Amino acid sequence: MRWDQIETDWKSYQKQAGSQWNKINNEQMSATGGKREKLAAKIQEVYAVSKDEAEKQIKAFEDKAQSPQAPKPSVSK
Image (cartoon, rainbow, N blue to C red; front, side, top):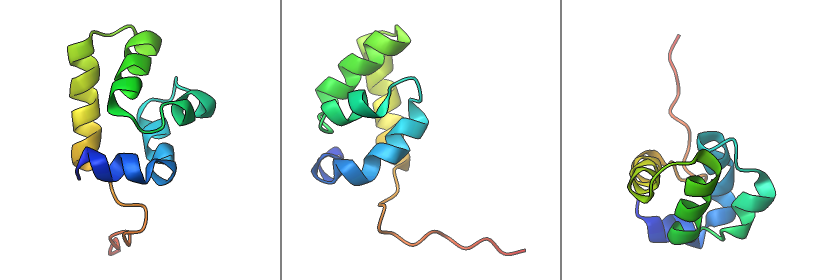
């Protein structure tokens, strides 16, 4: 996943981001507008981590983000 795709459809990705960073409330998450720099700054502020650590976390989120429209993989029982 590329960040520009996430930013463009931020409202759809907010729930996933909220699960990743659950100390950031919905209003704060929405206020970032999906802007990577704003999200990094909020992660730094709320979690008291360095800029590098915040970027590392965002990169991990970006790598595993699933398109909200994509079908969920089925789990066989």
